Length: 373
Image (cartoon, one colour):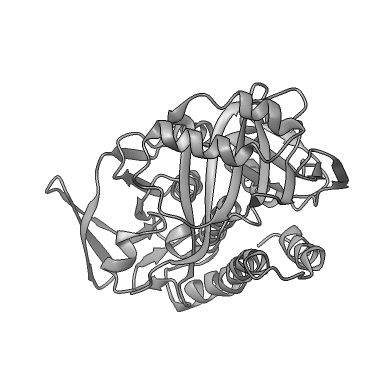
């Protein structure tokens, strides 16, 4: 294939990973994001083995391991803090990688953006695309600063409420699942050395994940509610009140929940764009194409897999043609759809108070993810 000129819209996990992998192939890459600083937002992120496999491919695994927190087991506790079970976590990235790494999300964003810059990606922040016009084998992108540029390929990695998705005529709106999640980024007590989950009590799930030597993020999943009228101090008080129903390490975590700016609340939403994810020379990946509630902690991993597979099929094919797109679809659509459906199912069982086969479902998904996409 002759040298390509590619635009990646969105500098989140999916977009920066795609930009890095393309640039390493000698592709000229422009990366834009509407936010002025992508490394300033977010709390924690859980990266399972199949995500770590792609971080290694990106050349950032060593840095991610150093700045994150790796662990290989999963704990389950009762609301009173009693440890009920300690299980080996599935190593979906292979035996040479940890099962899981927790990280501060802005740290991962910084690592990826810096890696993209070193690979030669030209990034612009605080910029968005207002129009995409396709003509033959090229796409003309118009930016909100009134500049234009032509590209051989445009990758829409601009998240859950993707404007790229709408610009190429895909009318898909993420739907609420009925759950909402409180998150906090807080100091890590010494007792927290892995993800531990509590099912039941005041919330459906109370969990936490270490993100570094001194930090963690903790979360509480409840029936979705409108908390938009709460002030930051009121939001902190609400989360502390819910957390008061959980003990053990939660007692120390709750004591460290003092900064209202570290609290956020989000609704679980989900969607999958029907195959194919491209229209002409514009393709959707990551949350723009599929999103799942965090019940399986696979959102970032599936975005990274999209990036890896897209870069691989571009490198293997002589042109951007139907055969290339078919391979991308064959390798990504059913796999991502299966993960989304499983994530939604876990939540549905909880909402319906149904005793579903959680170990069986998680085992099937883990076995699937162990095989590279």
